[in-house]
Image (cartoon, rainbow, N blue to C red; front, side, top):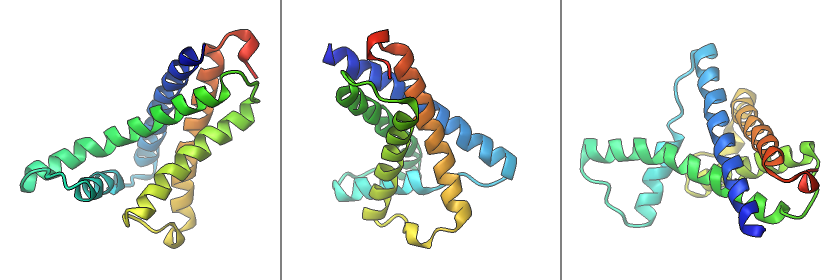
Length: 157
């Protein structure tokens, strides 16, 4: 049963990742703000740390552009799978699951960007925090709702 919970968690994480991206794109459209360059920067830093050559000039830029968002999906799906493993036999209330999932992914992404030297959250303005928090809460809520929908009634919180 644990493997089913991990798969359900991964599916919930994938749904959450799609919703996070949709909310981010909606924010860009409403506020006419540019796309963030941090996913591509993280991909580039990870490639540097791993001593992986992404190629010359435009090729490296294109690979970073593809790898950045892909890393976001990997993070969201993995977080859902871990949640599924940990929550498999527990009844977790929806608000708590939302905060655990959204906050966990936000802490993971912001923490890794900080460690890699891509950003420093201590310098963020209030609007930067809101732009980060709202999509992650949307991730958490949609992943938690999907998790609850996929689980047998006895495993729902």
